[in-house]
Length: 320
Ligand SMILES: [Zn+2]
Image (cartoon, rainbow, N blue to C red; front, side, top):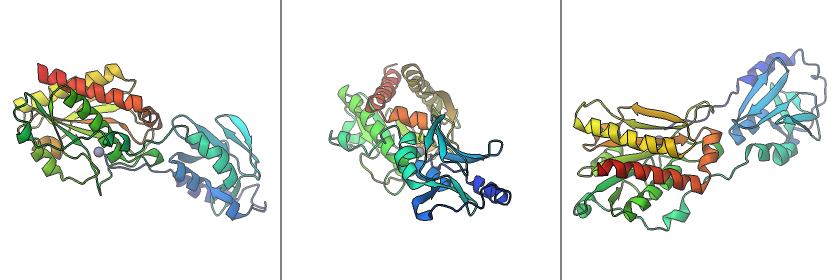
């Protein structure tokens, strides 16, 4: 969902108070044009940065890696291993600066150990046509797949600038591919990078057997990870029971078929879930704000795997 990684910039405030008593405040700083501040580095790398008071050092970290810088020291620690810089880390205007060369050559590769997920151009070639429900009505089943966000609405922007809307479309197209291969009629609310209103999305589900919206989660902290499936129970009728059934089927497939953390089925009164008249769920496949989740999703095989599991969950629901 919409959200952005927030950076713990508070440490620059803490440093300001440390400057007065710093042992190194008389050191001549290296040229600023050869330096980068740690808060800037952290922002560029989408990692956390904070001041470790007890060790008098600054720490950058994500779920799997960390780097430690001590003002006045030429030696940084990268995942515990010492690494030499061409000049020492230093205080300047309440910030800690390090050599930009060290940032480029050592720090950046440390935190970018996986290939970023790119817009799903490759599978876009497998033509997925938007077909209205009416044209598919002669089919036994029609499923509406709804890739969340799109166009001017990117959804969440995750680590390494992963756009939720692109991931949503990638997974959705893979699910559609499997559905169509089994002769199930499919309507996609969008099959390219277009903005579609929530009302329009819900409307497109009318007459279908079910509606499945595909999203990725995001929060201000990098820790939360895993998948969850949302449904709406508020109307308390048969539709909401069927929605729960669909949610559980998809959840159990993903739970048993992937290493992703199971955050279970949640009850959410979202517009697309409330406004539809057919069984409807929303799958939050993982957290774009979590490095481990994104590492898993950076593999095309894994994206294919979860798509197939979502497809299997839908088929089990349709067949019962
Ligand atoms: Zn979303």
